[in-house]
View 1 (spheres, helix red, strand yellow):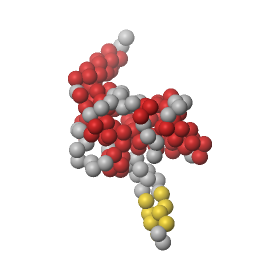
View 2 (cartoon, one colour):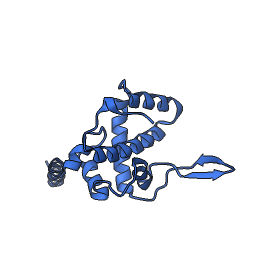
View 3 (cartoon, one colour):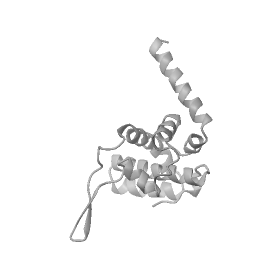
View 4 (spheres, one colour):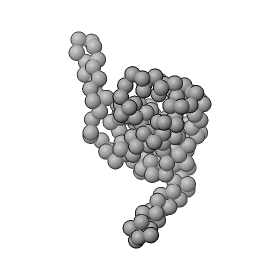
Length: 156
């Protein structure tokens, strides 16, 4: 094994140990798609998420929800902005991409929501929507102080 590979493994072990030592990070790691890297990145960026009134505010701060333009009383959804914390957004999107296959096969409300969304929208759109939902779930998990349970998840 080369020197850079050993250093990367050492950093991965350090992140995992730090995530295991932090209660908030342990709670976040119960969410599918959120591992030690995502949990520690969320902990560094938002802490216990007390500054956000609700989960959607966290997802909007991460720019995981589309911008809205309203004209004539009809809202029009625009694209996802590239502003905000790009690293954290990228990590959540990759985590959602990894969790999508497993979560869409479950017989839960979240799995049904994902299957329906996959039929209507492009897979990349579904991945970003799942990343936004995972951000909302992370905020809810921190507020409740309990780990994530797949069967208890409620879709939209």
